[in-house]
Image 1 (tube, rainbow, N blue to C red):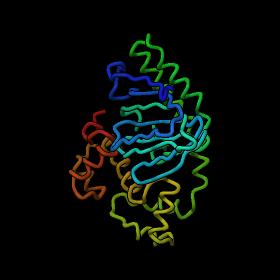
Image 2: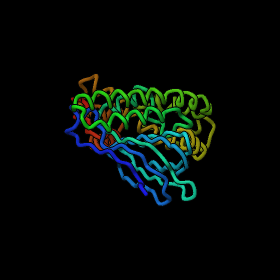
Image 3: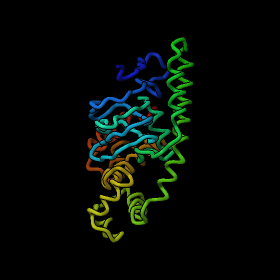
Image 4: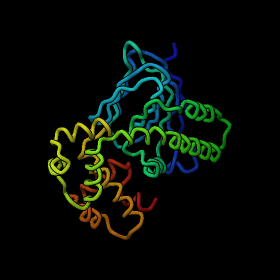
Length: 271
């Protein structure tokens, strides 16, 4: 019995692989022992659950996915996921890499959202696979068509994001605003929790439940997003940006940036 249908590609099969490329795509058929463990992933994985259910862990955040759900496993994070043994996953998926991925996720505000409940995206995944099956395509055609379909997939996730955003507790929205407005400082979780009248554990629970990350991870991610803007739009050195965003030192900032984005700050600035 076939367990997986796979399509694989070399970077040289795309015209600008550093900007966007597909590494793998395929269909996973239901089998109870299916699991993947990918420490500090260098790729973005987008998957749609055709049927069944499974467990997803991104870093330390765990969620269950079901039929109709779409999920994003972001680069720079630990991925661990597996099928439910009684109702194993049947899914269609694509693994991509390149600077375009991070840029589009930022544009559509998807960089903090990992699970998208009950989406209507199967046809887009299917279109992607059918296009990638065409082995007679030129590198230019494959690059253009796959990037366009990937872009359409992100657009299709917008309604799911907007629907979920409405459900955020007011205390969480206020906490996000505090973090966002103090990216040049060193805020403590307890300090922010006190401001929104929650305990630190309650605030952490809300962030994990609704944003799939801890408050500290959210704060660091927002600092990195601002760092990206400063690198792209100013002449500030990495050291100056590290100081401005209150990182311990330039070395820590550079390592964190590479962990989150997949490339060093100097390379991001030139991309």
